[in-house]
Length: 271
Length: 271
Image (cartoon, rainbow over all chains, first blue to last red; front, side):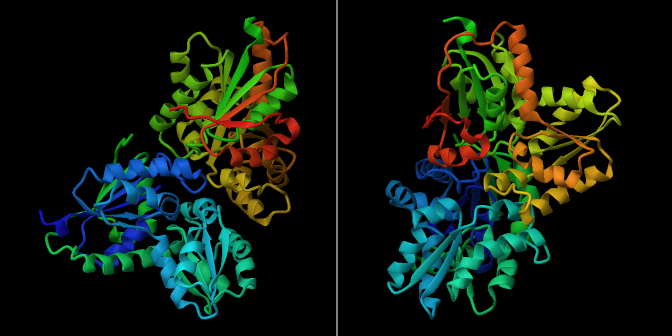
């Protein structure tokens, strides 16, 4: 098998990473994808760095049992907590995250150098976005807000613009950022692309909204092309695995991927 | 050591079980308590029965490494999924849950035989309350509603009566129960006692609200007395353990227990 024909391994704590998969399918539809959602341990966003790292290493070990040519950490929490550890342990596999691409894009796109970031508790606590954005744009001021209620609300389908609950919660979280007059807002959690319209309705169209999922897929496309790793062979059906509750995952998957989810989800015990 | 002087081992998937501990301290203040919160795997409420059972067996194994005289499953999800398995594996330790006491109380207290139950997805799916209530009152009609957003909202401190978000969400979940003209409502999750006032404000004072935490403590007091297991010896400080993020647990613990939490929380790896 040619290296480029191998799978891209994508993982997340649960279901949010499917927004990354959807963006990959949109941008580089010829790629073969294996997805793992660690639904036995979801959510990562409220856990300690040490615990997240332990779970992430298990996730990568599982993906690495397949023929993979690259790994995508499709979870901002996992990326910010454990990417270094993954890179250290898998020096021969290109490892891609979600924090770096969105940070680079935000750093370049901002005109007033005032960038907002919303994410889970763990991602905000890690300061991963702040560091990455300042690396690409040392003049940028980064304003971060942890939004712990957004993931549960999205998973319950509460992301419609006419839903008073999500509108109120989004307003509460984003008001401090609006007051800081940010011109760029990073959605630093793979669940948040579903909230694009609700967020846009509140923050206004003068603020550029950057999805970490879309940025990750764009970046992946560029990097795979540079590494000569774009698939030129057969397109196989995606493989989707979870560590618990495959049925629940399947029920919710459409919400995240529309019709792009092409196969059944299989439950595996990776411990 | 006399059997009655030993600890009562209490566990939950996370922090909600502290409302049971608080009720135990209120009802039988002389008892010695060891608490374990499985915060590395919280929440149990969205997981499969098989996965919950696996976590529960680890929890009990950990508590059983101490000198314990009884175990309290202070988590409706764990109780409804795995109590039978725990009893099978620990035939010599009295095992108490939260579902049975609240069910018995509701079954006896209802006048119109119309009882509402609110709980997590997993608890509702298990039909544990329905079965238990009908055992004590075969004429009762049980109306159940899964309320997946209540735990995350409570953990974010959203349980005040003047909070529009929790009021809206509670109204949505409870409207079908109000329409069924229930006269008794079981709070089938150990987080929900914090929502008592919000729920009461919506459902009205003609509906009796039964907390599974308070009912469990009352039942425990009666049973320990019958088994001659009430502590007559020294009262020791409580021991509190979690499997992840002790700091986060300590920060939130006061919300659940007020000043009753008397000691530091220790993190342990039980796997």
